[in-house]
Length: 164
Image 1 (cartoon, rainbow, N blue to C red):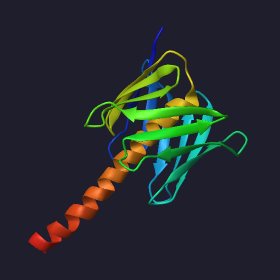
Image 2 (cartoon, helix red, strand yellow; image 1 turned 45 degrees about the vertical axis):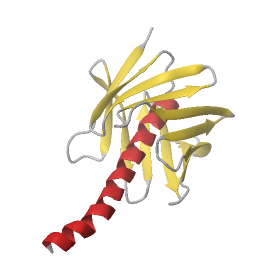
Image 3 (cartoon, rainbow, N blue to C red; image 1 turned 135 degrees about the horizontal axis):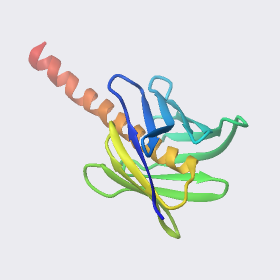
Image 4 (tube, rainbow, N blue to C red; image 1 turned 90 degrees about the vertical axis):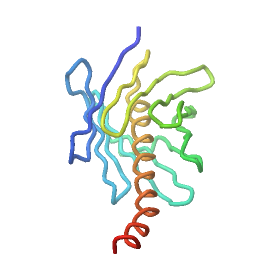
């Protein structure tokens, strides 16, 4: 039987609130300036710490033991990512050009289906795994923030040239 979680990112908040059947069950709090995020879901907590600009990687830390348990690597086009933890490899792939649908899958098939935007969305799954759900949401959020930064870098000089 499929389970479903939803998330909302209230205006002017740096956190995504995660809900199950209307009840708050977790969050993903982003710190853009430090390239870190702290996620908590169903009492399990993880920190995501991204390093690097040209070939960024994100270290996943289990907050209960304060130890690194995995790593996320990204492709150059910001359409795929790979989550490695405990010898397991999970892939993230966007399913449409708008990056509003993405899946987490491994060699055995798709396990998590995400739908949404930076402000709200859903994830459906058969087997709950807090680490993978938070990782899927973190990666999408990382890509959204990267896209915004690129847009600002491209259009701000044009704006200043035209109106400055």
